[in-house]
Image (cartoon, rainbow over all chains, first blue to last red; front, side, top):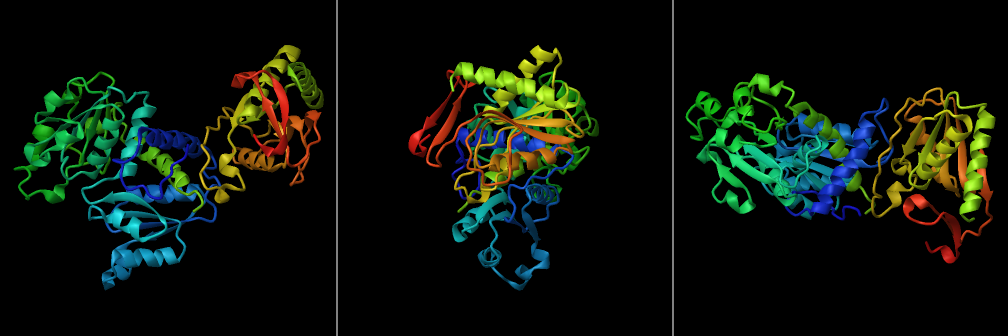
Amino acid sequence: MSLKRKDLLSLAPLSVDEIRLILETADSFKEVTGREIKKVPALRGRTVVNLFFEPSTRTRTSFELAAKRLSADVINFSPSSSSVVKGETLLDTARNIEAMQADIIVLRHPSAGAAETLARGVKSSVINAGDGWHEHPTQGLLDLYTIRERGLSFEGLKVAIVGDVGHSRVARSNIHALVKLGAEVRVVGPPTMIPAGVEKLGVRVYYHLDEALQGVQVIMMLRLQLERQGKAMFPTIREYARLYGLTAERVKLADPKVIVMHPGPINRGVEIAPEVADSLSSVILDQVANGVAVRMGILYLMSGAN
Amino acid sequence: MDAGDIARAMTRIAHEILERNKGVQGLALVGIRTGGVYLAHRLVKRIQEIEAASVPIGELDITLYRDDLSLLKEQPVLRKTTVPFDISDKVIVLVDDVLFTGRTIRAAMDGLIDLGRPAEIQLAVLVDRGHRQLPIKATFIGKNIPTSREENIQVLLEEQGEDDRVVILKGGAL
């Protein structure tokens, strides 16, 4: 089977088979990234454009490395250094990039739905690298890959997603995929951060962290967006850390073999205690390493001849 | 070719590999997915029986090195390359079921060299059907089977749930 999609905009519409295909394809690239010469000629002559309207180091670097290891040419395009400051619209910018024969556009944008708008307007393949509060599908896929790499199976897997679920595109992508794959997903955070009606996505809502962590095999921490502080989401950072911070004590409530995940960048001592972030159960750096392999897999699958 | 022919060809190739390389010192086999992997395992087993020595074995997926990748409508499914030893300074015998245009072997050699610098690469195939499009030649050949371009050769193996045999299909249909 192959991925018969022009674009990868979100995980919500993907079938279980498509998700599995992407994860299995990433296996091959994980092997490539473990070699001394970490490069294969599969995408020679293809052009990948990283179009990032939001600051990002991890995701952009990861995509850049993935494309380079596939031998594609990569251009990084960020608005501060471009005509966007001169008032060009997203679609016009993209059409210009397309006119330079970009095969794949990787888009990061602060507005939900930006990737979809772009995908409709251009012939190039579009990969959503995060759009507003909507989705961050490649992060979701690399999280799934990391869980699977640890030998955990998704059917019946107990996962707790902790923090600002409402503003998290990472949470949304993971919820869609994990529920589809048969996992039991719990979301936990202060009521101001849990969106109304989130149960409709097939998750269980908790407001007390200790309760939510009972027996889970995966703890997925979300970054506390400190820039939102003062917008009445929670009284103080210290209170948030006390109620929703993951400490070594709390990790003990989970399954003894629990893995702790975080999409980064982490706020040490806020949502996650330093000793937890650096503990053996933490797979945070595996997530980063797997990100490259998973993105190589996605770029490979999306680069069939048009 | 029937099961007996295939078995005898494999035994002969195992002997030839040992003869040419004067034993198993520095020798390793790498099968090209999928058919070549099964044949490589069979050769390793035969070598073990003859020489009472084990030979490292690897499995190579050449998809990422295909020269027609950018022309295909759908990306082929990848399988994993597993070469669990350092190939540098080893004599590597690539193993495949059918040698045809030579393009697969070109891709396999490129893939192999990305993993290290072997002392030598040799090629063992069960069937050589001719029609080379690249200057490539097998070191060990089970059987030369002259074919027309329109025909298709299929090697069926027990490992794939078939009776061992080689069949020629007319009209290019697989």
